[in-house]
Length: 202
Image (cartoon, rainbow, N blue to C red; front, side, top):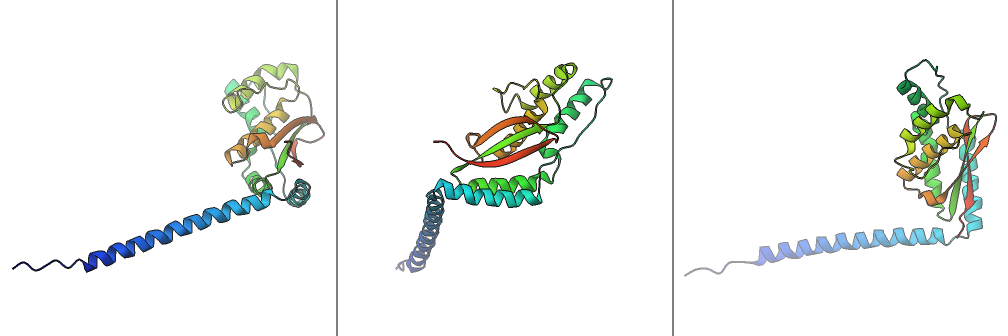
């Protein structure tokens, strides 16, 4: 006579598996709720308070760090490809590795205060010479046409514009919407980028 199969181990195994899956689902739900609630609480902070706190953090950060650029010189006699590479390098934020330490902190501040936008001001020391227009336009197009197809090169402050777009591209890659970034260019005594926080316009 065939003995009946004992199904108790299988039942116990299925119950244990169900318990584990239930715990995993509960943890996921709790984590999601905590994240959403935390974001909601931060978003609920008045914009004026966000601006004050965000500005304080950014100002403290900029006292210690800054975004730097190389200043490559080039000769008209050099090959076109070499000249274009040097031009692109002169506005490339990513060329100097130390810049990322500051950029990552700026991204953290932007994510912490979702009611704010970033004003990125590109500064250049001189207006572009007319004789350099062709080669700079070519370098600009090759560097930015894919990421910013709508961008029209500023004929006088292309280098300042290049620095701004280079930073804007990196911020976008790190999760900051371009809608939260306002840009401008200025003629100054230094090649640099100025960062300022503002309240987002609705």
